[in-house]
Length: 345
Ligand SMILES: C[S@@+](CC[C@H](N)C(=O)[O-])C[C@H]1O[C@@H](n2cnc3c(N)ncnc32)[C@H](O)[C@@H]1O
Image (cartoon, rainbow, N blue to C red; front, side, top):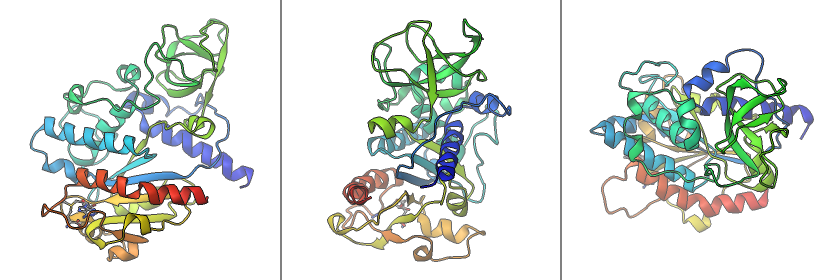
């Protein structure tokens, strides 16, 4: 892997980090300078899940829609998914950025907002997520309890933080709230309201004169094998799921899921060695309809779009498996084949 490639993967990583955060974060990062500079990231294999935002339309109330989004957030966290792409039906619902009013959101925009909110450590949410009607019932949801959601009394080699307005005492760095009893200083001048990953060191030490480093959000995974949450992005249709892939080289293995898919025992499924794997889940009418309705997509057959189209739950007793159920079932089904592919890489 050449140096150039590594640097651009790291840049993508920071870009993706921007996307995953709340609105205030995105706003502040539009300025040209003062973006966090992080060290270069090595390429680590990633798993992306693409989900039809239309599943939210079927929920009968805001509370039920919130619970549905919460189930998805937990499923992708349990199975250490790196990226969630919520795809729309030809831009029908738009992204949360496209509609910043407090009005009722639907479909993709709603799902994205809740997924991002839940992925953000609790102590950062107030700073990164302005009040919004879509967030009215998030308090009912079980927490993700992911490794980067550290409590106040816990020390970790890395912590997620948000940059503050106040300057550091020496004026050459930035104060960052990392959810501890004291703010820490990082060695860069950054815009306030920016979410960053801070290298904290191995032992509990909150001395004011220590200047810490902002690192890529993939660093905890590279260095310590820790799961560090998922990124969330919007795609206006299936085509954009693939064409707007933030990883260099795009997704190199694409899996579609459906009751109409091939039936293969999980222990016999051979996923080739991958850099960036994508697993797609459809809405009420399935991926076949999403492909049919995507005007940008030349291929109209699921088997031309995906490398493999799979039924992960044969012999189902209910006529339909709901998307949120299929995500849990399928991610369990794919766990061993993915592990085998990773061991080969
Ligand atoms: C309500 S189902 C759509 C039903 C549709 N006839 C289909 O293609 O499966 C919503 C989504 O759940 C997933 N799903 C449902 N049943 C599945 C199965 N047996 N195996 C794999 N995925 C399934 C698919 O991603 C599907 O698009």
